[in-house]
Length: 164
Image (cartoon, rainbow, N blue to C red; front, top):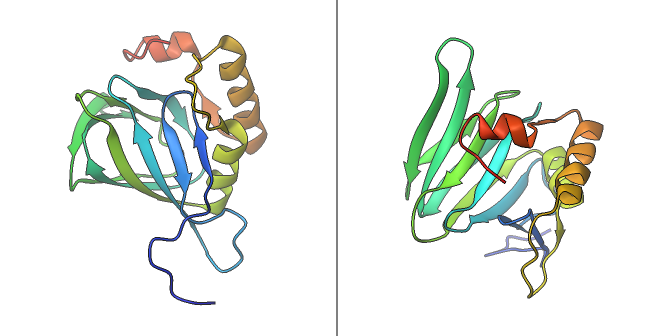
């Protein structure tokens, strides 16, 4: 074991627009958590979802809206920009929308289990852009269900302003 500067696994996946670079591998026995670098392209989004895992985001660049659903306060979009830190507690429904002209880059700390889900739910990066299909969405939702995650339907996403 040694100290590493700028570690990466070399694995980047496409989550149907947003991408995730695995800085540490979910199966890394030397780590208690999974570190990721996420990118949401301009106009891109992460659909409404929740999971029994915490997630922490440090915004490195860009401007993103984060949806928090709360039984007491209702839906609330929070703007986060460079230097902001966003904590998502266990089982809190949330979503992201890039409202800027540049990619949103974020450092993400989460559990190894959530890292495993992301690796399974995404598709390998290629040079060619592929539009999201209903089959892609259904596959991701099935993987999520296996992990005990909730992924909103396209209709549920539309109620909060996210359209596929």
